[in-house]
Every structure is written in C-alpha cells, then in structure tokens.
Length: 394
Ligand code: SAH
Ligand code: SF4
Image (cartoon, rainbow, N blue to C red; front, side, top):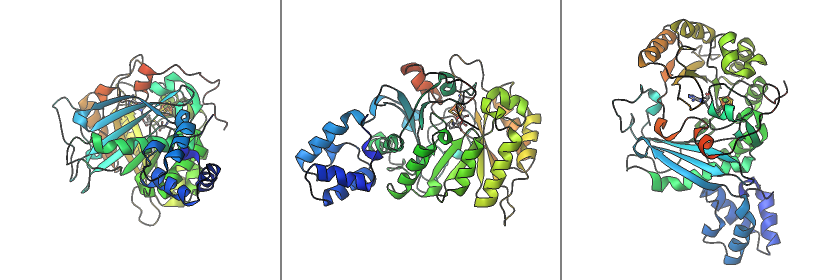
C-alpha cells in the first residue's frame, strides 16, 4: 500500500525528488510544504514545478486520508471529521476551539457544567484530537470505539496527516475573530489506544514537535493504563503530557469498565505512574468518565482522592495528579447514562476535599456524535474483535 507523504523522512523525500529528476532543493521545498505549511496536497504546493506536483498527486492520491464527513457543533467552536483511510477503514478527528482571554463562548442553559478546560488563555487555544488506530482492541465497555472492535494500526504519517488536514481547514472554520487562527495543541485522545501503537504514536509526536514546531507541552497522550507504555513515556526524551484514563477507584468497578485492568490493576498502574512522576517530575492528569450509578458515588470520589493524594512532584512536593471529570457522553446501544449535575458536583467536591486538584471537563459536541467513536459507528464498518482481553502481550 502506498504510504502517506507524512510517512517519509527527509532522506526519503530526497530520494522521491531525485527519482523524478528534480534537484535536491526541491526536497526541502516539499518538506516545508508538509511540515511548515502543513499542506498535504501536492497540487497546492505552488512553488514546485507542475510535472513534479502532478507526479506526487498521482502517486499519493490513494495514500491520502479522504475527508468523508464534517460536522460542526457548539456554535462553530467544535468540529468533528471522519477521514476514510486507504483500505476502507475510517477514523475520527475533532477540533475544539477556545476563545482568547478566558471562558468559552456560546453557552446554553442546558449545557453541562463547565470546567477550566474551556479557558483559552490570553491567545486562545485550538486543540485537535487525533486517532492512532482504526477502532480499538481494549474493549472498554462504555466506549463506542471499544465496542466496535479493532481493524488496523495507523502509520505515523496517517496520524500526522490528521493534524495537517485539520490545521489547513482551521482558518475557514473559525466561528469569529475571537477564535485562534492556528493550531496550538494536539491530544492523542481520539480512536484507539496510543500505547498499543507506540511506533506511530511516538513517530507522530516527534514529527509534530520537530517538523510542525509544537512544543512537547502542547502534546498530550492519553492511555487506558498500559504500564509498559507509561514506562516508555518516562524514558522518552520528548516531555509530552500524559493522561491516564482511570475511571474507577477500585479494581472491581474498573474491571467492569476497562477490561485491561485485569492485566494492570490499579496498584500496578499507580506504581507505574509513580515511577513516571519520580523520573520526569511532570504532573499527570487522570481522566474519569462519570457514569450514573456505576462510578459516581462520593465514596468512590474519596477513595480516588486518597489513592492519588500520595503522588507528589519530587522537589516541590505539590500534587502530581490532577483529576479530570468527564460526564459520560451517552452512546447508542450502550446501557450507561450520564450522571446528574448534582452527582457531578458532589463527586468533584469529594475529590477536592482530599486535596487533589480536580476539574470538570465540559462535554464538547454532544449533539454531533462527538463522543469517542460515535461518528464512525454511524458511518464506518464494523471491526474485528481480536481474541483475549486486549490483544497486547503483557
Ligand atoms: N485509548 C485512550 C485514548 C482515547 S479515549 C484512553 O482510553 O485513554 C479518550 C478518553 O475518552 C478516555 O478517557 C475515554 O475513557 C473517554 N471516553 C470514551 N468514550 C466516552 C464517553 N462516551 N463519554 C465520556 N468519555 C469517554
Ligand atoms: Fe480504547 Fe480508550 Fe475506548 Fe478504552 S476508552 S476502548 S482504550 S479508545
């Protein structure tokens, strides 16, 4: 199968240009289009000669991601994209815009509680959420992607290309001058488990940093809790942010929600995160999808706080854990429900009482199927379910 242009490194771009009988500086121009201007379409690389553009367009036409669907929500501040991959699978990417100077823009009385995630800082924020796999083999029982199954790994280039594509669409999608005009953050929180595809995840993270010029702190990788992946993140010289999807404070509840907990139960997961914090001195955010009657009891909040309170940044002694509560985004065909606003508040307050920093993440794009995997479920084809818990060797 032809690879994405973003799968090619500098040497491979040079070879490609040489093959076409063009001088070596054309390879630098091509790299500038891809990384500097984030333009994956050779036909738009206006300073390359016509025949080279045509040759590249021809050769890579079948390797590119095809935008199949685009849905806007939240008054134009959230955009969801479905990209068809070569070979027929589909993945989702989501763009979330945050206005300059503080809190989010349009707000309706029905909106869920708003946390500090909406704050855009002085320059605003434009975050793209990308996928690392078509589907996911982890089988989390509340997650549309997990219930859909796994079909294939993405290459590093396919991960990077999602960022490039969204980046080039951003100027047209801005809902107004208060919205940022360029991408500021990337989160690996779309479909798939990043640490079950480490080559593409780290390959993409490095390219986003070195090629696209994003600071490592602007890149967040979210994991369901694959401890070997967390250990690798501790050793990797790229200081990206780490998010761990914990979702429960005891193994009984977590086993039910996150099957991979049977391989790395909470104590082992927290030992891995403790080593990560000791090695990197970086804080870690813990994602907790609040589900009515399953994991939203204040007792569980207290237990969660007590589990995470001992995690401290060496030196400063400050809390290393930050809890991010995400009210469950209902998914057709899955019998879990979102918590009431009161339950969210009670849970947040009970975590805060333990001293652990906590915020509630606003649910973006509830009306545009923006929960992980939902758009693909309505448009994609079913995946295969690999045998065993996770398809990942311990
Ligand atoms: N596989 C990785 C990253 C992708 S999922 C992981 O699990 O961390 C990104 C986040 O969305 C995870 O925290 C996941 O648990 C959460 N999530 C998935 N479906 C959800 C839903 N319907 N409502 C709320 N959060 C959901
Ligand atoms: Fe995979 Fe993350 Fe969904 Fe679990 S929550 S099935 S790890 S994408």
